[in-house]
Length: 213
Image 1 (cartoon, rainbow, N blue to C red):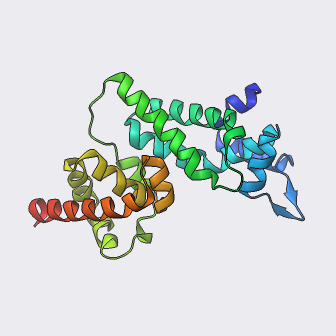
Image 2: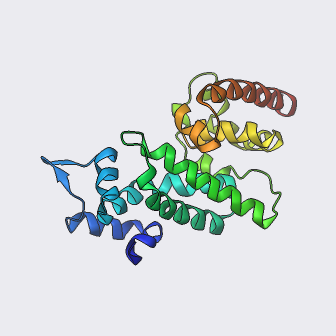
């Protein structure tokens, strides 16, 4: 793997725009390549195709890593290492499977390993994910819980929940991951996400009622 690809997660966004203008990103019949096509090309050794995947997902990869590591430097390293490990594992990637959930599973594992190896016991870091998430997309009553005027109370209440409760809420409503992506990121079955999310939201509501009412 070339040095450029190894450092891909560290390239500033402006540089990605330069790459796009230079024609590095290929198209098919005038349209951009989708994930499946980019992954297939990357698996055949096309590093430019994988660099485009990095460009597409470096933001969500960093936010996911930050959520689980609680440290910006560790998150940066976890995201970069996650991209590199995913690249090296493309030969084992199931053709036609969605790439983003698979990538986020690798990134979240890297971030957890850094948190454990450092021996840190900080509360779950949520603000970066919360600020970056699309809270307006959350359905009622979750949308009401995530309204801007209650952000401070919400973050405090999440910090009082068990880590697994806070993580599933953050993945679904701050990172705006689908159930499938949340399951992959947390290493759970998809059905487990729905049941645990429901219980976690109940506990969150209870925390808000006790401390905000």
